[in-house]
Length: 499
Image (cartoon, rainbow, N blue to C red; front, side, top):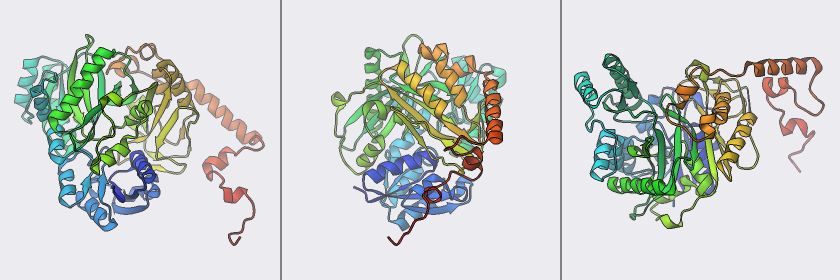
């Protein structure tokens, strides 16, 4: 087993990986940019090294600097988290060539599956159903338009080299195609360093259902059941749950078997996710393989009782999976809400800035993976995710109610968040009945606004607190936000370190 690993990421996912490593007795090395000098992941690690300025190319995307830090620190392996270099086959290849271990799939597998058109070909050859579309990426507008017209509008333009909603555009007619293709190419180049795109048929309001897989170096491959990921904005998930309310055991079995077949066909090793779209008739189609840990992995952990990061590390160290498919079970229902610093009233635009105050929700079955503290800064240079709020309960109804309660208890001041929107989504009739699809936010919440009465109530409470003062025994607003929460050194009285 490794004695030290470097986490080539930032924010909540870096903190989450470090916590498991610490439980395993493994030392951790953080890397950070200038703007993240006081970020929680920097403070959590056993060692931390400055990479460069806030530009990702100078820090979290700089392969040379990261590998140099790994060598200087004595780290034996690198965990990429998700985002940045997590799905970069060139980085995985470099890590291995430098005598380090990449905690993820082999570089060749990542390259094949990272190219969406190559992945589609692999799946088609293995009899995994795929969405009609191109099997070769392109950058020529004329050839792309010809492919779109042959399959019929609406179509989906997608980046060949990545995922996460980057470089993706829905096009409903010929007139809008050229501009959408240029925007997709530009966004793809910016996000992945590759402007290649392709076109596939756009299904009408499908479900987005994915299966978590684990595979070791000894030929063992299992799936850890499904996650329903249809609640999305700008093609990126914001609410996930497991199990999917639309799958019966027969369909779940067929999709799970297809996910395992996809992993075997690709020669997959380590943790990954096989994603499918499911239409209204229950037909499912391969979408892509995410060759990394997913943002929504905690809900799988909640229902299975497994630590996916621990298994990632053990697989990378050469250990076989300690279970087979027949031994895997799950219990209850789990939901995750991604808490972003973004404004849902302004098309989910990022909302960077200082965190003036944060209070985490608590109670049975509640987990909040985050990298927040009062006074932390949310930089504008990176993905604005603040944390993942996760709940578990014995059934779906109880899980929804628990998540609503947890969201109400989650206080993040200083930046805008979609917390109020998520409460309304969870309370909506389509979500409660499980009648969800990838366009639910667009169809039902496109003109959403928060309850303004709550703003007036908060203002009245603030004025009352300022005039009357705090209730005896409590901390004032001015103390908790303006000067920071009082520390034990201020409240315990005199102390003596010589005793």
